[in-house]
Length: 111
Length: 115
Image (cartoon, rainbow over all chains, first blue to last red; front, top):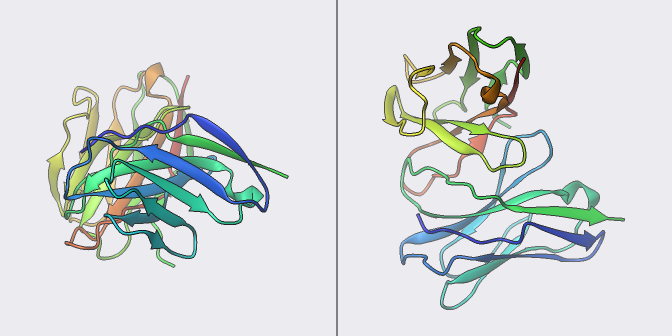
């Protein structure tokens, strides 16, 4: 699986959009971009994934650049409960394929 | 909503003792993962099962760690003997394991402290 690079930490204001970047310059054509988050003392939670088109669900939006070398997770209206570590993972979407976590981005939402 | 169940939630043990963790995946999920997460780091895969078979245990310290999933449903991870460096969060996750449905769902984890 391709390696990802994320900033170690970032702050954002409550009610504002939070934009979390991820670089994955060595991504292969069949690899998807996945995002998980981990709230303190809990297990990681799936957020969203995409291949090349932008994706949106009830939690977030995923914007993938045309060359697929980077992506941005957008939390449209950050709340205090969004404070967590966010992991960007690149992997082939195949049955039984494992998730390989990096260090993630520690996001602190401030009132 | 179906969840991955883990127990115990917290465990304190003395070094050189044996300790075991239990995981019950979401019903029907064929793939089960055990991860270890040291404080301040991302989770690291220890072992992966497909039904009752181990498909990846390359990062499992086999001299002291063992894992089983005898009937392809729930699973147990054991450490014997425990060492101080084993203090960590142990996470279990499961997924359907079928093409197109590979999102993994995690349990709340077991926080192990070895004293």
